[in-house]
Length: 90
Image 1 (cartoon, rainbow, N blue to C red):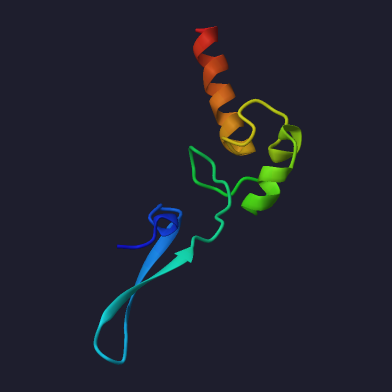
Image 2 (cartoon, rainbow, N blue to C red):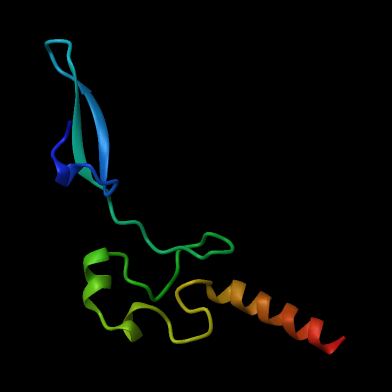
């Protein structure tokens, strides 16, 4: 049983074989991944990649100041807005 601090899923479990033939589990911190667009999966511009930097910044610097900033990329937002305007015009 791992110690309580290692039981969370914020640690990646890596299984290693020792020279004695035993399998042991190593726990490593997960790497930071960049924020991605919810629609197309493209990496978002204007959003810091490092989690520690994201945590310490104020909200206005964590994401772009536009509709769906930090959720959709600019090109997807443009497409969504065009579709909404076209639907409301009919």
